Image 1: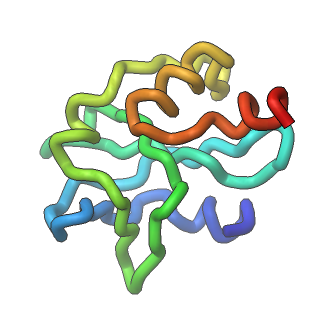
Image 2: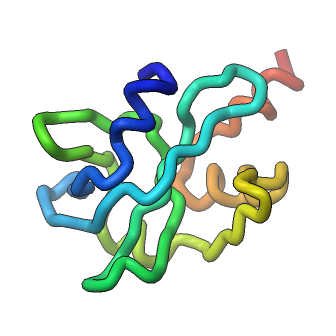
Length: 112
């Protein structure tokens, strides 16, 4: 997914792997090295006051919705991340990758 298309995701309803509505896309975060969209924040709750990070890895943009390959409970229990200055720190990124059970692409670059 390119950056321009990813920005169009803002405000899109998000549904989990079981078809349950999770919330709406709040922001899109791009990898500093590849310049590709890597994460979205999902606004949770009726007022959307809490946002959690969800990886775009495995997500599918369907008509008027973003389908993510994780459960609503997994998103709701995700670690709280501030992303000060609009960026994730390396530690925050590693923690999120670990939480979602994904391989950190920066780590695989080191080991290649």
